Image 1 (spheres, one colour):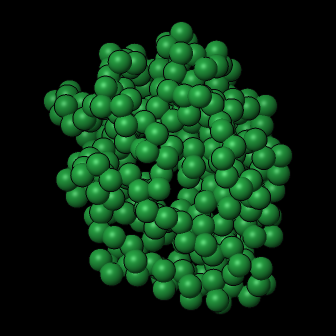
Image 2 (tube, rainbow, N blue to C red):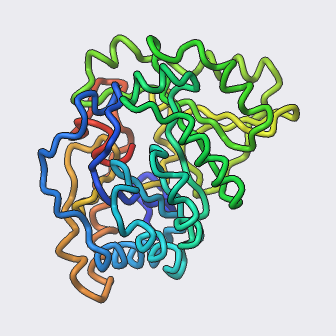
Image 3 (cartoon, rainbow, N blue to C red):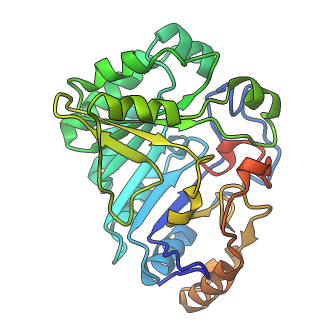
Length: 322
């Protein structure tokens, strides 16, 4: 079992397979994707070793992230590798939904259990303004298809003062008859968005208190769940969640590690550097990989220190899929 010096156990791996994204979201890549790093992304054989090594150390859930993972033509093969790894019980993906309607069935057939889709606004004009693409209707069609297939669907929206501060009621109306979980994520400061963060950061705490006051009840999460506080209401088919990285003790329940698309272990989304494990992925035996993972975990810090303005090596969220 992967366990750090603070007693936190890690059942959950976020595996980035590309840092390329075709959206230009204002809070992440406002100028679009800039190729400023090595694009020798993980090969299928290396992904297989990662999945196997982590599974043997107790990992039960793998989330495939980017950038935008659907930009890899071999994404179904990646999903199949993860889903057929002994010990892995859940395979999820985070996507901007651009190709969801066309590709979700192939992902499902490869073994996908659930997906997260990014939608920061249900207003088509605002959505296009944020992302640079007029694709909201297409993405909503893809979500409907995913639900028809029986996939568990979560939708992520980043809270931003100047963009979607007034959309809570619109999202709640959507949840009335739609069996998804919508999670509002506090905007996080990164190396590239400091001024944007200062203008747009909102705390999720007032929204949490409003939900509780209107009869929303906390959902009990399992050990592989992410960091969201989720709530349900008997009058709604959908659930709502809040991810508040600036809240007290946010890191106390951390259960996830990250691998970048070029084979670096990140002990935190905001770690000051990635730790290169790629040489260990060339060995068909995962024993050395497992030993190194346990050793490197000793350097994991108690907190991300975001509240102190520390953003580490994370220039933008596309680097590691958030």
